[in-house]
Image (cartoon, rainbow, N blue to C red; front, side):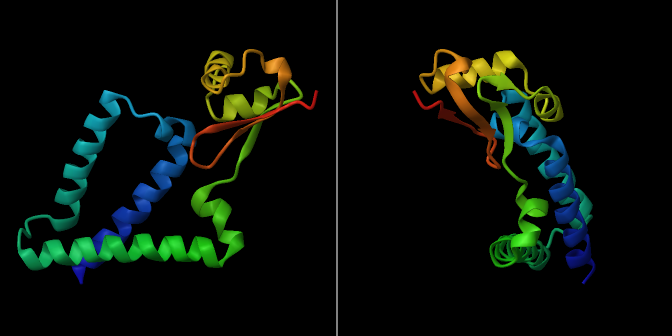
Length: 147
């Protein structure tokens, strides 16, 4: 039972941390981020299992994490009010060609990054964009202005 409680605690700790880190950072992983994830995984394993290296302990931890992941997905699907808490909400970064500085600051996105994301989607100028929306996945969607 101790393994399950530690796993549940660590699961929710990681959920809170990933929500705090921000969508944009999670959508673009650098080599350092990959190393950090491996190190975090090792630290989590040590914190959850402590000195229990048994097969039963490993199965218990993996099954608990799988159950929590499926439960969070189901809760997000079933209860609309929980969705913003669990997944976040899309955020408008640009409207009618004008950046919304408060939202850009909140997500730590520079205008240069916004321009680069627009160029990746074959948009040469932000003035031709009606809306730029940071999706819950971390991608930026651009809706062109009607001509």
